[in-house]
Amino acid sequence: MALNILIVDDSPVMRVFLRKVVQLTGLAVGEYCEAGDGEAALKLLHEQWVDLVLTDINMPRMNGEELVRQLESDEMLRDIPVIVVSTDASPERISRMMKLGAKGYISKPFVPETLRDEVEKVLGVQHV
Amino acid sequence: MSRNDLDRLLTLAVDDVLETMFFSESSGPCQPDPSAELEADVAFTGETSGTVGVRIAKAAAASLAASFLGESEDSLSDIQIGHVVCELANMLCGCIVSKMPARGCFTLGSPGLRGGKASNSNGIVQVQQSFAIERGILTVSMSSSESA
Image (cartoon, rainbow over all chains, first blue to last red; front, side, top):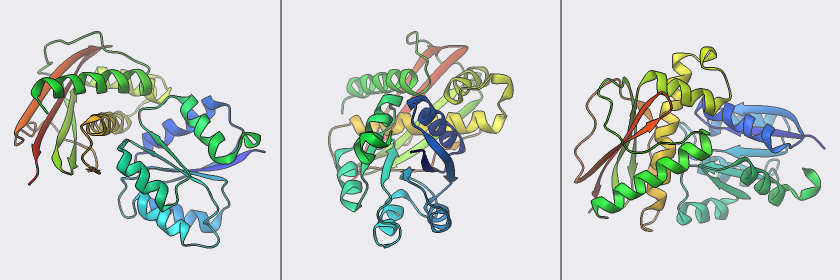
């Protein structure tokens, strides 16, 4: 099954990078969507179905923490798995994001295999 | 942390970020390049607060940006190169503060290009190192101070 993936990051070059890394992992992707912050991501998620969200934490307007919180409180969206991709690798931050509802966490820098492993863990091997 | 510890941390972060995200490597420490025209920094706040900055010549930045984005250098705009330099500063900052002794969460600011202004030297501890990379020199600095 091809996955629709939403990449949320305020850095346009990071969004391009993530898209290329996803391609390198060999995951079957149907469509890539992009948003520059949590607010834009939420708007997009109400208009379009995605199977997985990859999100940064530090973003303007609505950060990744608030995005995860909003998704968790939305009956329509709470089942969409979220993997956080962040430069912040502190155990405190990882624990906080997982408690909020994130299903996976990847700290930058990372290799493509790390992303693939995390996606497999979150979605189940049969999806990738 | 002592200056030596910070120096070591900075070197580890540069090696890690360059190899993993930029498919590049440093060929060792060197003197800074005073003519490097691109500078970016990221502020971090937490129990320890400070700034991590990078300074790099445009040619070296273009080479890193091409590796990072998997594009040819010719196809990259100055804006894209600037964004990649900001992202480099962001990743180095995250990598460094995450490896500092556990002291709770840090908040990282948005990376921004400095436009040639002098680097922030308000911190109590300041370290700076330069690394020879493909097509130039990457200088990384960190200033930090303990919060009350």
